[in-house]
Image 1 (cartoon, rainbow, N blue to C red):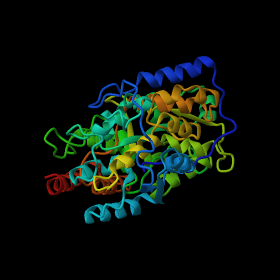
Image 2 (image 1 turned 135 degrees about the vertical axis):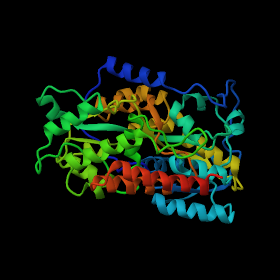
Image 3 (image 1 turned 45 degrees about the vertical axis):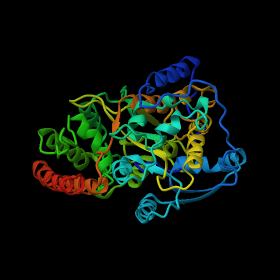
Image 4 (image 1 turned 90 degrees about the vertical axis):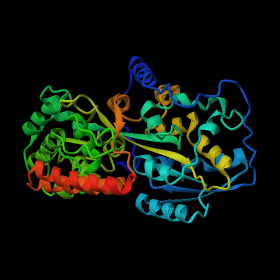
Length: 453
């Protein structure tokens, strides 16, 4: 999981005007993906949801806000289909370890799982563990007419589509990174959110007044820091891989990105930031100790929860500032995947389709969990019950339109995260950016040679 936490809704969410709401809905739909290797069913064919009545499906979920919400409606699926759901919800690292063991053994015990595409995409595809869903999506006896595959956002479709154009999963949740900032402090100075990295740095410097207030924070801890790092890397024009899939780290863009990332945390973050994961960053921001924070958009729920946060109603949400190379928002996508080893593939697909339907996307967004569908943001139910400040909705949608996969699509994503994570930690502690990048490049190239054959 890139960075999400418990759901908590604010009673102080800003009211939306009709014009604002229409703007939000239209803006998101405009960003919907219209191109893929699958077309939506165009003619009415009734899906027999009772087709696999009596089947028991075995599902695996990693702990995630989307999972917390969808579980509430499992009895509805069981009533609709006559199937039974057996499921397990465990932390992501342990869950993935269990899944890999079972897939390697070929037991077929898991029918579907909530995949972290930003980690599992290439490895599981090359291992043959994803059941391709293209034909299921085309089959009008399996896919409901109103499922509307083309309603999925462009970044979500890209995240689940493999190099051979097979679709490995149905997107549930897209988590773009955004800027959280103390709107009350900004308003006092007549500032809007920073539009560029230079403006962000200038405002961090102006607000930095330790120990009462620190100007800025992002993750410093090894591995965890690899996700916000993507934003800075893209902003400076960096790429993960060359066209022939070798390490692209040995470029000036990587060094410049490291100078900015490590320098900002060294100068303006709280002490000990080198060991901060999302939890420590969020806690410092919620307690009013930090002026600006970059992380996954769905952390916002806790900021607006009076039981947890000292800054309820004081937070602004904005798309990430532009860097020298342009505007980018790293995104991290989860999706429901059918196991290629399942003995109940079509039945499992029916569950995945139901879980990612418009109805359930609507429920998720009403609960404050972002979704992969474009139209959901403009539905009347969402417009009637805004649960977060308007700037949260707008930042989310603006970020989806400039979304870009936050991690390299390679077999061993975890090892890459460790490599760059150690480099970032060393740079924060004072090592020369050029030196840590040179060492990371050597290690990354070695990793690719060992795993990308």
